[in-house]
Length: 115
Image (cartoon, rainbow, N blue to C red; front, side, top):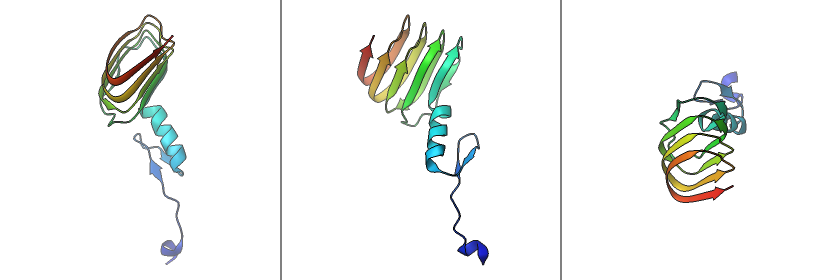
């Protein structure tokens, strides 16, 4: 049959149901929507409870409260201002760079802080 002989491209479906034709597009989208908090202001409910050991990034947050309540592999925190950040458990490194007036509660193997 035609369907059996036609080579179809696999579809990659993101957590929110968005479909991608390539794995690269899927991974980029999934990371940006599920494993990143970016450019947010005055939000007290930035909570992630399912991370399953994936890396996580947060950047350009202002006056926010962040809770990562699952284990992660690596975390990058950049340019946050006046935030409270709770990190449940990070199996490797947490990088904190260029943050001001923040309070951090972090459980990690290695903490790296700059500026």
